[in-house]
Length: 88
Image 1 (cartoon, one colour):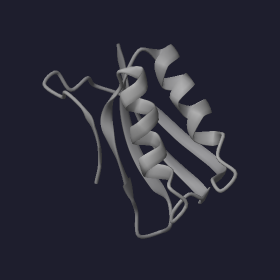
Image 2 (cartoon, helix red, strand yellow):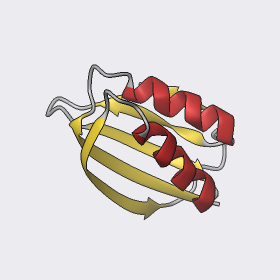
Image 3 (tube, rainbow, N blue to C red):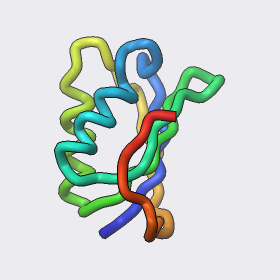
Image 4 (cartoon, rainbow, N blue to C red):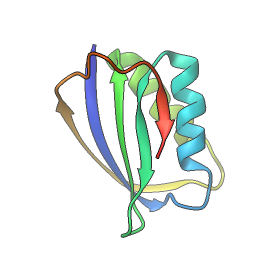
């Protein structure tokens, strides 16, 4: 299990990014959250297997409306008591 913090830039707000992330996460057993930032980016934390998180990113990027220009990511400590993925 790993937990990663992401920041996505591009056309990522107003295009269903966070809800697509929630749908993908729920299907892959990933916990965490996603939220819009004031600068137009989306911040997200995802916890699960590295393979599941990578698959989640592929699913998010399959949208015709979402255009990810850059992804910043770093591994962070696990959240032991987290049980779901939510949109903030």
